[in-house]
Length: 484
Ligand code: NAP
Image 1 (tube, helix red, strand yellow):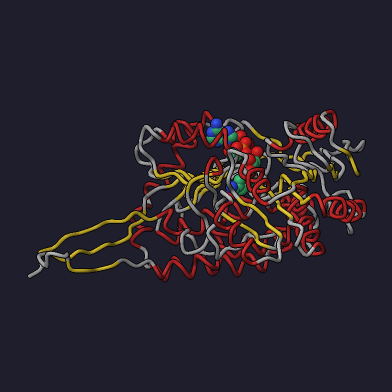
Image 2 (cartoon, rainbow, N blue to C red):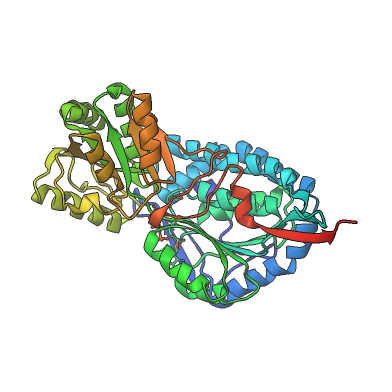
C-alpha cells in the first residue's frame, strides 16, 4: 500500500502541455482540508501558458479526429483498466486533497472510471442517417463530426468524476481538450493526465492547466477563435459569466451548474426507504454535491417521525479525517464553507426552525461542521433558497400534494428532485410536474455513467453521460446530393 507521502511524490506538479510537464516559478499550495497542512505545491499557469495549451490542442485536433474510432476506444478502455489498477491511489488522493471519507472516494473511482468504459463503447457507435428528400429529387445525408478543440472547467467536489465525465466523451468524439481543474483540488486531474499518458494517449490531445487566476486565464481562451467549445461544471453565477463571455465567438457550451434539490416525502411513502434515501441524498460528500437534497418537504402527518429517524441516524455518524476507519463525515472544503453553513443554520433558527442535532462548527484543526438536522424551517429562511453545500438537513412540512409541488418548484434551480411515495399514479404526476432534469423516485442516489445527467432552469444546459453525452462534443452536418 502506497503511503500518503509516497503518493503525493508520484503526482506530477507541472502544467501538462503538448505531452510535456512544464513548471512555473509561481506556485499554488494544495492543502488537506482535514488538517490545513500543505500537501504539495503545483504550477500556476498564466494566460500565455493557457494559450500554449490551446496551441497544443489545436495542433493535433485534425489528427485526433482522423484517428480510427477503434483506436480512440482502445485508449479509453486501457485508461479504464489502469484506473482499476490504481484505484486505491486515486481514492486516497481525493481524500487527501478534498476531504471526503475513503469509502466515498472509492465510490467516486468506480463512478468516474465508468465514464471511461462507457465512452470507450460509444466511440465506435457514432452514426448518422441517410434518406431521400420528400420530393424524390435529392439524397440527404446527416453525419456527425467532432466540434473541435474544447476547454473544460471542473469543480473541486468530485475531482475525478467531473474530469472523466467531460474528457471521456470529448476524446471518444474526436475532440482535443484543455482542462482546468479547481485550484483547491488539482492533484487528481494531474494524476489522471499521467494515467492517460500511460494509456498511450498521443501528446497534445489532453492538456492540463492549473491556475490561481481562473478568470484571467480563461477569458483569452474564450476570445480565441480556434476554441470551439466550453464545458463547465460549477456554480451558477460563474456559469452565467462564462455563457456571456462565450457569446463573442458563439461557442458551443455545456453547463452543469448549481442545484437546490427538493426531497419530497408523501404520507404514503415507505418511511424506511425515505430515511435511507435522505441520508444518502444529503450526507454523501458531506453535503457538497450539486445533487444533494437541499429542502426536505415532508407531509405533516409523517414529518415528526421522519425527523426523529433521520436525527437518530445522524447522531451516529463518525466525524473525522477521511482516511480514518469509521469516519462518515469529513471536513468541508474550506473555512468559507463552514462560515456559510453556520450563517444558514443561524438564520433558519432565528426565523423559528427547531434544531434537532448539530448546528455548530467543530473546534478542531481543519474545516469541520457538525452534521445537522433542522425541522419546521420557516418560509423566508435563506436555507430554502440557497444551495447549502454542507451537512445540514432542513425539513419543511406540507399538507397537500399541490402545496408540495409548489414548494418543490419554488426555486430558480432545476437539477434533480427526489420523491418518495408508494402511489404509482402520484409518482407519475411528480415526473410530469417537478421542474428538474433528473428525478430519484424512491431512491436517493441517481448518478450513473449510462444516464443523461443535467438540469433545467438555472441548473444548466446539456447532458453528460448516457447516449446523449457524446453529442455535446459532436456537431451535425447535413449534405444534399442529387438523386440520380
Ligand atoms: P465555482 O466557484 O463556480 O468553480 C468551478 C470552477 O470554475 C473551478 O475550476 C474554478 O476555479 C473555476 N472558476 C471560478 N471562477 C472562474 C472564472 N471567472 N472563469 C473561469 N473559471 C472560473 O464552483 P465550485 O465552488 O468549485 O463548485 C461547486 C458548485 O459546482 C456548486 O454550485 C455545485 O452545485 C456545482 N456543481 C454542479 C454539478 C453539476 O453537474 N450540475 C456537479 C458538481 C458541482 P478556481 O476555484 O480555481 O478559481
